[in-house]
Image (cartoon, rainbow, N blue to C red; front, side):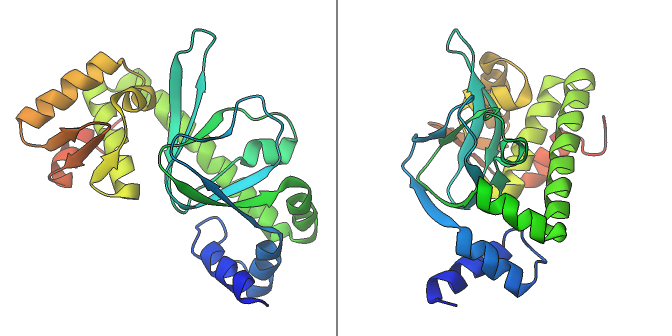
Amino acid sequence: MTDVLRRTARLLSANPFFAGFAPETLAEIAGICRERRLAARETLFFKGDASDGLYAIRRGLIRIGTTDDLGRAMTMNVLGAGDVFGEIALLDGRSRTADAVAIESAELLFLPRRAFLNLLADEPRIALQVIELLCARLRDVIERMEETTFLPAETRLARRILTLATDYGTELRASQEELASLTGVTRETVNRQLQCWKRNGILSLGRGRLRIHDLDDIRRLARIGEI
């Protein structure tokens, strides 16, 4: 195995999606991976584009969302290092279900669809990993629907911020528009709530970013364990 393949295999093994695969399986996956780099605000693909493969993020943040005919944007998720996306179109061969845009410069690993499907046919364990990933995505959708129905906007916003902070740290690069889309409220509601938390010393605000002073405050506001 070349040094490049070894390095790629190590990166894959650190990704939750690929964790647990045998070394020879990781080596085989590494052999079909390609590196892809994106500049900040560069679009990887648009909703409706043909599916070409699966992506794993090595570094950076990717916004998954969509835009309606009036140009209004909705952020569905913000993904970072260790996350995998593009699995729906990868499996059914249909068009992309959302846009993928780099929030900041990013490095990705790309698995071409045809080569990956051939690998799935030979390695049933990989197919199980894909099923688990899809189930996790579905659970997340159901949880967000329940939150939107039963929880006030303040609690939903705190939960979205807590989720992002758990994944990416206490200094977050996320605009108020993106937080509004993730939470299912208006930008004005997000701004009003963030300004309130800022006055209370819970967080600081900057342009397109926020810094949490104490995660315990956000956990308390998120009311984890409640629906």
